[in-house]
Image (tube, rainbow, N blue to C red):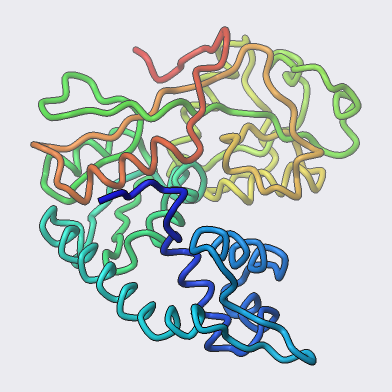
Length: 310
């Protein structure tokens, strides 16, 4: 049996063709599946090349099916349904169909680094919900996993961990500057030392980033002059961009509309992220880790200072 990929229509192409049949036109089908009309047309054309003939005819502005198209419209739904059932059974067999994935993490990661992975997970495993257990301090995440709160923890790399660990790249702080700051016009990375005389937007002690920011300033030889404190990371970035003072914010938590106010640090303050479990990975946890590793992975910044050590 020859199953060479260039000789058979893909399931996606069959699905797009059936959408055209259901909605009566390529334009309506494109709107229904949230794809552009040219993209749908290209998929149909590729399908026709693979089957060796047209499946759609246009006559006087009306869309009509060829005999091949009518055959596909008849048998296609059953084919797709059969594949869906097979995939569902496979996922049930490996434990990632239905149920809930319990994920323990930091609130900053949930709203930043993990957001693309959560979005991708929802698209791929719609029947498996994710319950987030969010904490403010990095030490709380491994403690919660050890106490059985979740299937998987994602945070900074834990010390002497008894179970499996998977590295997931790095996070780093960037400076968000007020619009009137003299450094805002420079495209060059800046030093934390350069910000010693500024007013600062700081984090409340209930936010784990407070210790990290104060440690970075202490390492640079000064104590920041705080003018406002917040527990919310996005609020810190927006306060800085509004002119209240300088803020250090995890790069992936900076809202895209504030990119003009962001400056990289010449000596990046960074920390390594990891996923870990108390015992063996559950199938759902392993699947989520694979998605998280592919979505938003950041390599270690050159010359990074890891204040999480020690």
